[in-house]
Image 1 (tube, rainbow, N blue to C red):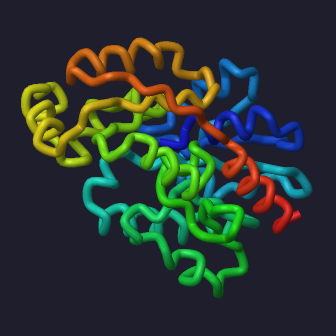
Image 2 (cartoon, rainbow, N blue to C red):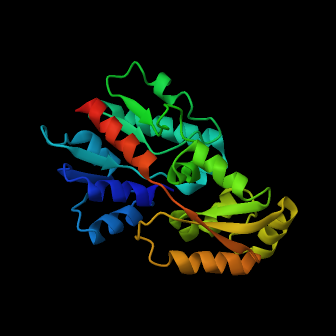
Length: 249
């Protein structure tokens, strides 16, 4: 869900020497976005990456995108994140996980990897607390998230960021709204039972998803939702990235 934000941070960072993307079924999206932004990228399999050291004395960023469906089962999410973190620590100077609490399954990951020579970090608020989730991160943190929720005056509102909008059918399945991404009737029934009335359109200003506005309109039409425009604030993410870099260099 942070694919756009990761691409944006890299595009804006002139100090990056090399960008390597771990090749898997999820890697094409961020690869294409970085290519369109004029960022040279190299794709490698995990085996190739682990067996071929990266250039010394250069700032190399390795990106691994994990699959959306992991969020459906918290244990699977934790296992996959921990497994891949263990794989990458021997060849990394630092690993920043673009996850929030995610049901608290990742709340102890920094402590669990504290004995590794490679620092492992997770997205944090400016006050040091772990970010709640991908929505809170692009709204600017927990307090702004809460303030936004309060502004809805108790009326159910579903958030759509550009990446949520691009993948909402798959994410509804992962979130348990239905078992079939094309089963709109079941999803509509669940929304009605929960009391959702609006969709919050969170425009991050990152324009990799060219059909973002159309996707939000489609979602609102299918579920008879009003569209509420919610401003984004990427300062928390920018600060997380900057702080983690400073810890390493």
